[in-house]
Image 1 (cartoon, rainbow, N blue to C red):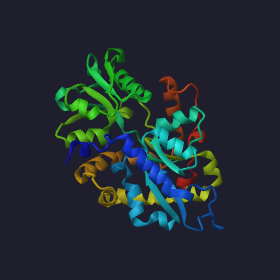
Image 2 (tube, helix red, strand yellow):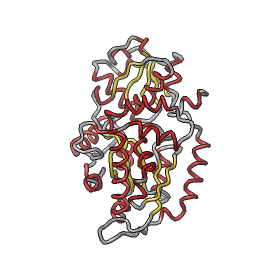
Image 3 (tube, rainbow, N blue to C red):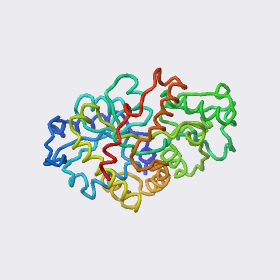
Image 4 (spheres, rainbow, N blue to C red):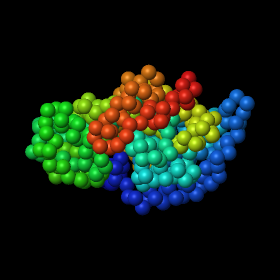
Length: 346
């Protein structure tokens, strides 16, 4: 297997993904129509085409979605689901804003950022109840406490939330973030850490960290929500407030089917791995298994029910974003997301 395939969690060229998006959107055609037939019970009365834009290329965190496809749960809810990949979070938002897709997945902070900037976005379920991000280093560096990154070089992708997480983790450990040499390395954190160009980087522990372990580089990781950051929803399924209001049956059908898929995976992870690998050629099954195992504690977190948004957690996220200059104004949990579809899924 080539290094490019082994790095499938991060290393995909924008041109290939852009072509995938263009073809998929063209193929879905009338699926973006705002007219959805519902029965007297409020459920979809006929097969409805809908598009989901992932947060990144397919990987273990999406196992429940592919299990739902494999098991026919979306079709049972009268949804013909198209799954496409974005070139960036911005593309996901643009496709949904333009009516080219009904559902998207994005980092919880990215959703909040769009909300405070006045974009039309509303969460309908939490795919991850905890954030997957954190500070990752090679075990051989001998770092047992984030404070030890003082005087060392740490890589970030360049998004503001990376800086906020780094500062929070270092400060919580009693260190001074100003004493850390920060460099922007995009999504090359795994490669740059393995080859010694940086001592650590901000990345997804269940993806990047597991990738490094799979490559033969043992790691030491410091999860953001264990070192000062709030335990906010790591990945959020969202749509627009208008669509949520006008097409509740479609929202409910999607959430119900998706939750069923993830419940299967929680009971039997292999079902999710088999569906993921079958529908996405080139994925390393061993790596996917290890990654899914690492994601497991993050799916449910401490939420009262899988998929829900805990109001207190969203309030903490709002405060965190203001404190770290990611937002100039607070937002309410009711503005960020709704729980009615998760509750409706039983």
